[in-house]
Image (cartoon, rainbow, N blue to C red; front, side):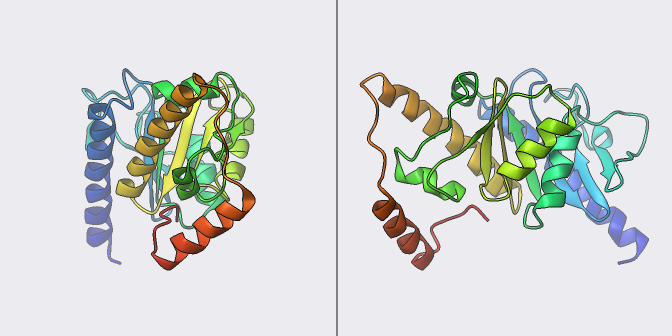
Length: 221
């Protein structure tokens, strides 16, 4: 690809990233400067800048971070850039990553609870549950490593005492995962008010994944 075409593709990706960020804000999944989004590009990734909000984020304030961890320009990338980059390096099917502090995801994460297989839709993230990784200080290598490991076999995970992060083949899929995670965490919190929800059995999960494969229902790739 020639330089002109590469620049055009990257500019389009910057615009799509800003649109994705604003969409998450409009959906009520992010507020203030509490989340970040990224996408894979040739040689690295694009990520929302440090302190990004729907009001101040623009294509020019999207930061390119290279595979060698250096970044382009004077604007700093989000403090969580290590977590995003680690996910791309670990999983080649990931082309977009979304990190939020949405309400019900945070509620489970602050209790360090795995989202268990109480509902078949949990399976759309790639397994019978969604793990919660232990707390690590934001922006650290340990948080990046734990999140990348968790998202090797799942499309999303909870981050202990923090929030959630998910990956997708594109922004539409990643945003869908973020929305579904918040809905399912809400349903789980509500269900627990009536008692401990029943969990699907191993046999029921086998049947679910078999059926999902046949109808291309599972969207976690």
